Image 1 (cartoon, rainbow, N blue to C red):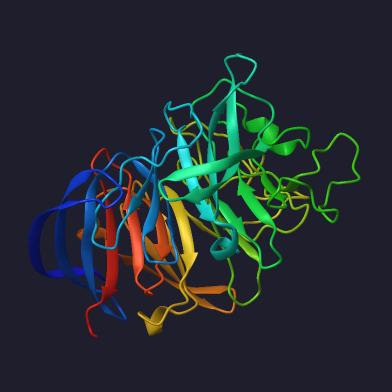
Image 2: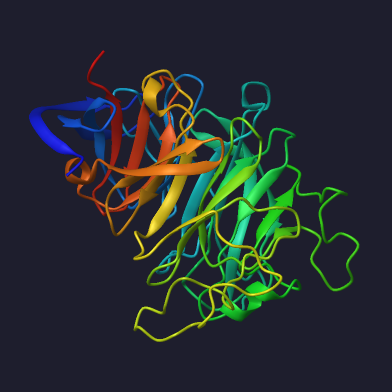
Length: 385
């Protein structure tokens, strides 16, 4: 085994949040070995209700979404605020709810925060879809809220919403979307947002160089298609390219590097089978579709991913770290350029909860949130320092 726990310590205390609310904070630290670093795994706080997305503010505080519809601020001391006001209503159903959170690249000047969530049909129908809003974070309030994207069509399902938000170096906003499960065939057509990656400007307008802008019958926001349920996204620090992590069925989790107009095969080509073992497609290669850059069989149930660029873990710089739900671990893909040279499993004994999000903090440490009714914010630091 590549990972071993060799020390545990715990400190419990109670704090009162400066922005309201009181929470019991349990500071629990374990030390663990990996191939290249000894690490400390510290529970910063717990008691988050199925946290989904994580973004760090310039002062080191974290914004954390709870799937039930709350956005909270977590201080560096682990104190959880009362819910931030102004968050839109969400469809909290199965996999739906309040999903990702991202800061505007110019946040220090414009204070804008972006949220993705499952939105009810505004006309009162039974359908729902992934939507994105942006607002201005003022204290413990979101103000000047505006919807900048609505997935179409509204569809009656509680599954496969995506959804990660990531900004390109040029300032585009990429939105990753799911196929809505029972509408999987829509991933191969361009008249809907199911199973797509979308590229827009932060105000919701469509870039003129999007690949399908001039194609009749195609939605101009679409960047790539043929995806299943893309729950991870990150920008390569060297190339500026978007990398995505696609949650497959039973087998067939994928890492892709979506190019403009690319078709990534789902569901006509896949390395997985359905959850009951039935065949979705008997083909892994179909002409006109692109192969995954890397994939897992069996599935590890991928969630979000990052490229590590900090100084806390020098031997991991440039590597792609992929969080996993079912496997309750992080997969470190050791990269040489874009080529995957080796995979190492990290933290599986230390976390022991489904990992929904992974982010690099402003301090260079790695942070995880766990998908649990008593969800945790966990800090991974270098024990050798």
